[in-house]
Amino acid sequence: DAGVIQSPRHEVTEMGQEVTLRCKPISGHNSLFWYRQTMMRGLELLIYFNNNVPIDDSGMPEDRFSAKMPNASFSTLKIQPSEPRDSAVYFCASTDNYSNQPQHFGDGTRLSIL
Amino acid sequence: KQEVTQIPAALSVPEGENLVLNCSFTDSAIYNLQWFRQDPGKGLTSLLLIQSSQREQTSGRLNASLDKSSGRSTLYIAASQPGDSATYLCAVLSRGGSEKLVFGKGTKLTVNP
Image 1 (tube, one colour):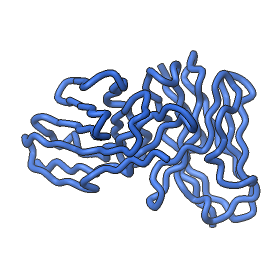
Image 2 (spheres, rainbow over the protein chains, first blue to last red):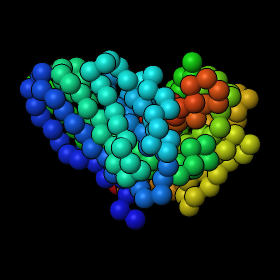
Image 3 (cartoon, rainbow over the protein chains, first blue to last red):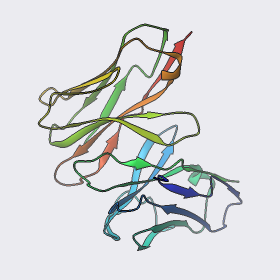
């Protein structure tokens, strides 16, 4: 089992640029989650998908953020345009049973916006 | 709105000591409570998941308890080892309304050899 795979591991870019984060969930998992972790706010859910359909995007901070899941094996989180306050570690997680099984996390993408 | 609090924020103990990490939550309408471990620069690793109908779960040297009515959980680590050094996060999966995993800010544990 390869686990949840995120890319890139690190991203440094200038403000105003478009940033795309990628996630491959564990095969067979039907729920996928995007989280953001900062020192100030801790770990926060941005959006989650069930069977490729967005269920709750209430955590997406602004319209600059968007997420897609075109198929069961791939999801993207896009920030356009990026701002310095978007700097954080972004995690993707997946599970095969939302209410009964633990979520499995990727190693995250450390994003720095200059 | 569910809120999860973990105390203490940091803990340093000598190797071999038994220790308890605390977690409290404000809304008892939950599906489950989960404990995770996070190593520096890494994602979260699930340690234990306690369903709302359960009182405790055990895995090796780890034991987690859940008192839903009082909104509390503890993670007990027996015979601590330097390899246990990490940040431990508690999270609850709330029922109704916004059904999402809400995390505490974690307890950073250091076990000194």
